[in-house]
Image (cartoon, rainbow, N blue to C red; front, side, top):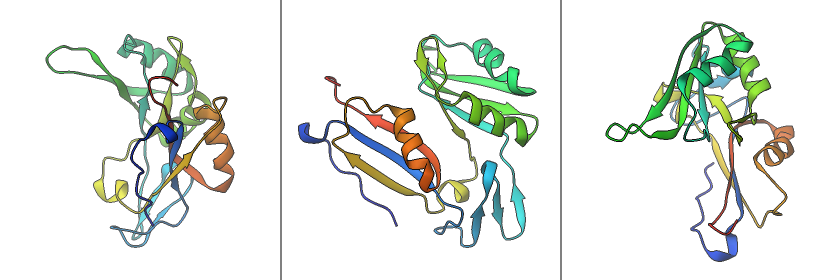
Length: 175
């Protein structure tokens, strides 16, 4: 089931949004089962993710900073901070690829919401297969959150109900 996003109005300016990835998912890939550590089981074939999406990066974070941070938890194969093609300015996100899925899982667990250059980073598995990405995640929107709730508090509160794929607090310019 997908819940349609609500249009922004001044009344709902503090909204929490997250995708919840349950153990059994349905949608464009029937029978896809997602277990722990980002393992997708599609018709008997396992796809194990060693690639992480790293979001909410400070504009000045470099590839070497990402490498140094993530390499502490396992062998990093590659890193990339995504940049605008013409200006070369950071787009605020990047990717880290590990040599094995256990290191990727450990990095996600240990480094998610860790400050880097004074800004808390958000980490999730990067699923390049569109069938996996579009296989029935539920979008949930929560309005009128207290100003004291941050990304981590929202994540921790709802993770007791299932695996959180991504979580974000949306605010207007006034907070």
